[in-house]
Amino acid sequence: MPVTIYPNPATNTLTVQTANSNYNKLKIIDLTRRIEMSQEINSINTAVDISNLAPGTHLIKFITKDGEEEVQRFVKIK
Image (cartoon, rainbow, N blue to C red; front, side, top):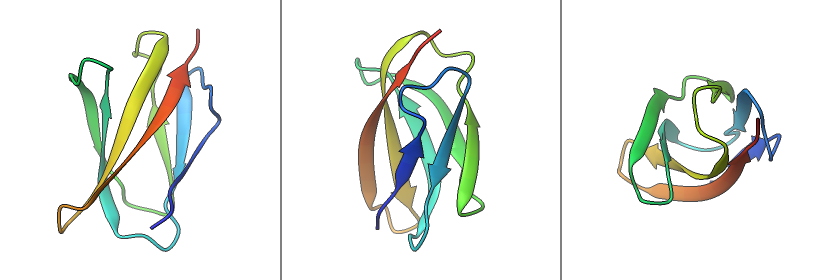
């Protein structure tokens, strides 16, 4: 279930492309594992507003209805 996120690094908006996957939710987590935000995935291309996140490295976790997960990293810049 491939997921593509771009641009990386990003400033205000991160695009999540979930073609051919069953992911329906995402969570953005800081490196201390604190959940910073959650969002539903309702289409193949989902825009995620990251303007309120602090600059630095963050994790993005994709979750299916069955509980399967995939984690990727992205960098938020000013």
